[in-house]
Every structure is written in structure tokens, then in C-alpha cells.
Amino acid sequence: MRQQSKSKLALIAFAVGMTLSLAASALPYPNPGEGYVQHYYSDAARTNLIGERSYGHCGEPFQWGQTSRYFNLTKVVCGDGGLP
Image (cartoon, rainbow, N blue to C red; front, top):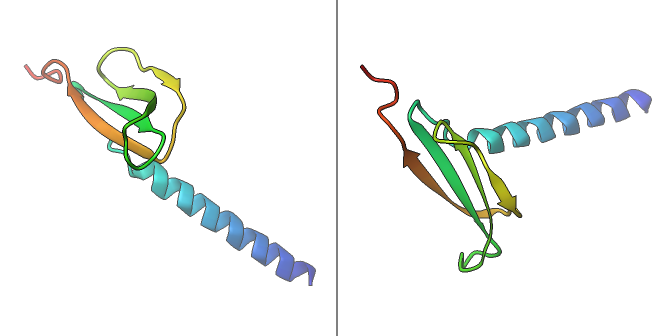
């Protein structure tokens, strides 16, 4: 019985890890000279902005407010990405 519990726990841990890794890989990785801003909304209508977050290579990253599963992603281009 104890071995069965360990197997179930290992399977649950694996499933949680896969879910988190898939969620993290869903956001695009910015190239040089690019950044992204996520605008978070309170519901699917996307009319009530509740927070924002930025990441990438355009200025300082920022975050304010709340996050939710309802968001839009905006790509920001700044500079030439280090091209000669």
C-alpha cells in the first residue's frame, strides 16, 4: 500500500510539473530589441483592466495590479536588436 501511495504522489508531481512547464512555454521569448506587455482583465469581455506586466529587452520590466487568465499580449519593438 505504501509503494502505491508513492507512485500516485510521483504521478501527481509529474502532472503538475508538466502543466506548469506548458503554461510557461506558452509566452513568447523576446528577441533582441523586443519586449512584451501583458494587459490583464477581470473577465473574458476584457473591458476592465486590472493589471499589467512587461518583460523583454525594451526598458525596465514592470508589474502592477493583479494577474488573471484573461490577458492580451502586445509586442513592443525598440531599436534594431543590435544589428550592424
